[in-house]
Length: 122
Image 1 (cartoon, rainbow, N blue to C red):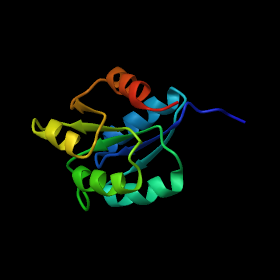
Image 2 (cartoon, rainbow, N blue to C red; image 1 turned 180 degrees about the vertical axis):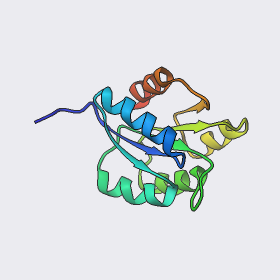
Image 3 (cartoon, helix red, strand yellow; image 1 turned 30 degrees about the vertical axis):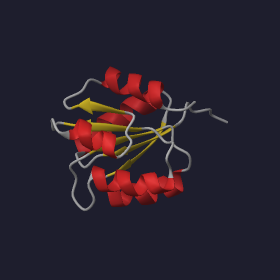
Image 4 (cartoon, rainbow, N blue to C red; image 1 turned 90 degrees about the vertical axis):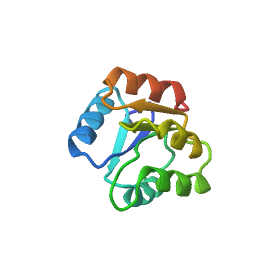
């Protein structure tokens, strides 16, 4: 049986960013699922099982990151959420949803990995 360092959920509507993150994190040994908006992410998070971390875009169609974070926190207060954003006001929004960290887009992949390892439970 293969042992993964954990499960990561990427919530991102840009397929290029999602694919890049997914490929990178899988290469680092993580089991990864992707959701294109918050509504899909809520369902995926229920089915995917305990998560090491969530990488969350804030601006998405259907259900954005803020709305997802508020709803997700009602179910799970402990899973680290790492907000990925290009917008300057999102540190406040990240704090509002109980995010562990926020990363400004464009980001480098090493920064993502450092945060997943740092905030994700083993």
